[in-house]
Image (tube, rainbow, N blue to C red):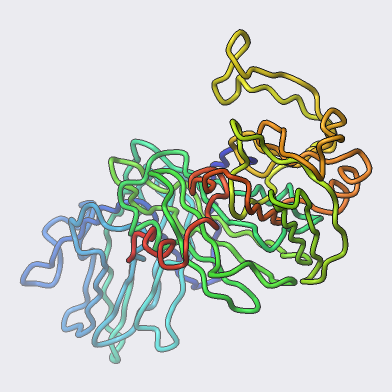
Length: 414
């Protein structure tokens, strides 16, 4: 199981072109602006917000939203400046601490300006907007926006780590997962900001494993050659309990050829299928009666030419019945419950005849080497007639044990 270390984003601010208006948004915002007096000017032009100046008889009106004095504004809601009865001539939004403007865009008719760059948490921004009516009479409106400082910021870490599969791609059984660094209370709000776009298009859905982990899988195994664009637009999203999204994340995955191994506990044989065609069959030994291999689809999540297997990792430690610790070779993990496909010279005599392992799929050296060099992350191992229970859905990639109807019920949006 491989997750990337949390990455904390930094918001960058840059100045637009001449006359370009600038602004931004992110956390929860507070905007101050005062209405004008009867003579069209504010009682205190130097105050933090208000109508700074207005020409006598000016018909143009400039409004800034979120509304004056608003608090706890969604960071996904942009700052918008609108002119009625005229057009905007200039809008500047500045980080007051850094004295740096932030970017935004003007509509073609110059009546609306919208921020296009997120603000940083815990910062204050000054808004200065100017407008003019058809007669050239002008108005200048000012206000301030202050973003909150979240109690905690949650990063969206991806499973599998994109860097681990960038060169090889992943198999047709690969499940996509986000692991957040803090629990998510507002699951529906967060899930709305998650997406997986598949090309070619294939139906899929999210399933919440717990408060920190959400997985995505298609209705059936991915089609070979599929490209997946995975996004989490969670920066500024309220996770609940004072937690907000720390950054947005977009990554691309490639699905390689279909490799599916089918291990049968009755025949003690494993057949290997490449893009639907059987290319190899090999004798195996599955888990014995006291430690049967889980039945159902498994997905390869890790591989190592040498790996130390220790039963203490799942609670059976030295001095207890059933304890073991040994170095195994040509290993590929197929569950977090300690099940691997690997070479075991001690069980070669039983391979093809009896199930004697602790739950792993044992192979001889030649077959284990071939399997290791041929199958990898995201490829599928389907186990039948093992005498074991189904792989639990929470066991890393037990996702495929659920029917499509069951899987869809795990979405927070259902």
